[in-house]
Image (cartoon, rainbow over all chains, first blue to last red; front, side, top):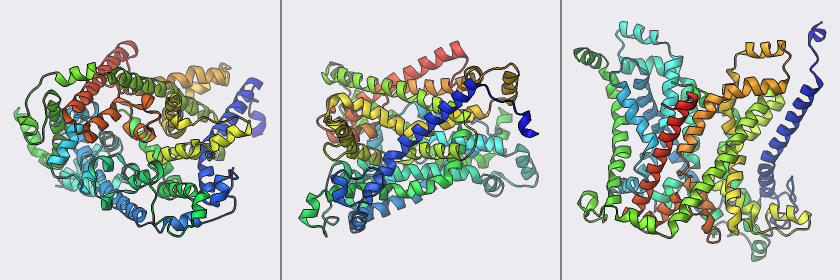
Length: 299
Length: 301
């Protein structure tokens, strides 16, 4: 019954759909292949990598590269620093974003337009790199962890996302009811709004956390001491500037190094650095999409 | 006035909440805006920003006379326009295509895969490029070898820099950038599709006359933002991709400001370069926004 009611699509439409499926499949393969290649190379023996035997799957399965990575104290310290920057930084980011976004979402806030302009202006005009650097220097934040947290403690874009959420998803009647019950703004935010805002808090946390984990620019500018460097900065030295880490090469022979051990090491480094984000990502994909969509609604 | 004051008094706690973020904006955003004054001074650390002597437009003149200036502008603009021309339409096409696919495993997989590169850090992205494109051991070299060709030294050839930069950017961002267009397509009124079907419209016509117009508002907004930022090519990726061999085509304003200013400690001159860049961006943004408001009624403000 059901089948007979469906009108068969015309041939032109079916060809179009087939072409779309084919094109999308091609795009997906083109995006996925380099990623797969990197993972496979990292699990292959250095000789297989350098002699070009790896095309799709690991050849001569080997964990040597990974074993060497975990011997590098420089890299492990970078990992630890990145975790610290990400956890503390993300907490500060989310807190400041909510503190800014919540009052801006309340219509009764006198001067709301003024605060909006104050904030939006910074999106389109900034002092630039050098004046900001000099400020951080003046405040004696250079070469401290605070330089990783304070200069970008919230992003205007995320404030707008959060504000839009507060405006559209939390009924204004709740505030009126709370006020009648003698509940003032701070308590209203803490006991009513925040518990209802878990989706947006999740989105903000994820966006900010990925940003911190992947950042290297602030470290490049503000940090000098090796014990403060985040993972991405260490990676830049090892992968792009080709500095070699003696600890990583400690258990290797000259013969191995000649056979491109360092090349294989780089693939493993890439995997180790990207795993925390890429493993989490499929689980939070929906939230990310939601975050972008909330932001796209005009507030 | 009296009314406003009662409102302030009634919601004083909101101002308490705003205190820290507003303080942040003033200290970390507005103070540097005034710090830009050093572009008109000969800044030295001892005398500080206020004490250093005024020199007027000296640094701007030096910039405009510098032989680097035309190259910087050219590289910055070319990279921007190239990125825009390649990177802007691709996510739209991807969203239109995904919209034609029935929700299911295939659609979810394509989305999962194409969004993933967005989460790779810039450092890792550039490392991947270098590894894959390096002579002798990179996979690009081997692919060339399959056809019996010898691969050029991609990262060292100035002519390749912009294409590598732009297309790796498309690879990394197209999926994620398509989300916003998918959202716009999800908001299309289903009755439009029904009406189109009643009229016997083909899928292609439906895409052209329903889906595409639905994307216009968001497309215009994003286009304004990108055009307003045309001189603001990202520093991070270009700086990492730079090497002495490709610097002729890869030096842009942002990397120049960093090198002259922070590495060369020439604070005033590089602030002038940065300010010049910001002002051009601001003018572009306002201009594009005004034109768009007149022509299409879509605008940022």
